[in-house]
Length: 319
Image 1 (tube, rainbow, N blue to C red):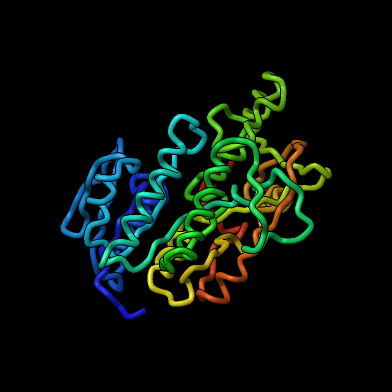
Image 2: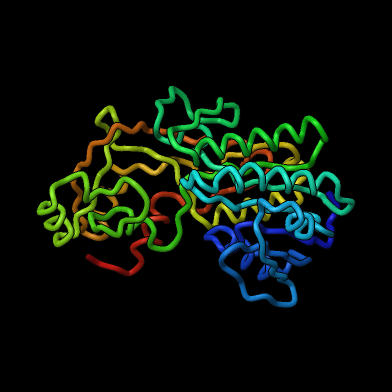
């Protein structure tokens, strides 16, 4: 693709990834053009390069207005595990976006931010690293199903209309102290599992006072390995995918080079922060999201590994 003056529509722009992408794009001197944020309940502060409009992604007229004169779409909007709204957003909303894009004279590329929920996350055992050729294996719940349906719909628009698009399949996205809030027996834990529920209340309180962290074990009793990506690495992949020729009609796993290993994390935190760990058994399965394709075709390279992510989460805190 030639360098063009971009006009990018961002759905889900007020979320973690949308906000980070917006800031990174506007701060990058190499990125020329403007952004349009389609917001539902929350909002952003507009500026000369950022237009904000409000409305529901499930409304056809709203989406048509949002896509007008747009060159690129970054689709992030999702309601997570909300059965009441998920089909309106993930299916109906995506359908109106794709329909508007294929009929647009200015449209260049559609970027869907998918997730490893479409290939089972850690719910199912995998004999091999998970590549982009892995069959869809949604785990129970409406969110994982929606991620499968989104990727399927986008792929069919490649087939039906030769639409230019790509899917960046991201696992659990981390930034700042997210990992420290995850590795805690506090009630205000980040993500799942909720470790304090896996022990009795008194034991949970003792672990909190002692600043102990959970060492997650998989179904085989080994330290859990699960896929993660740092927010900055995902955003860098998004920036690359906007114009890269080899991104057209492709799906890419965007993850750390190696999965996050809870055993190695426990050892590292004990060594660097004197934080002790407690084994926590689960029925989940260790997984490995292979990012080789993104590195080979896009030239993308994650900067964050386990140590960098833990350093980022703990910062200067010494427990």
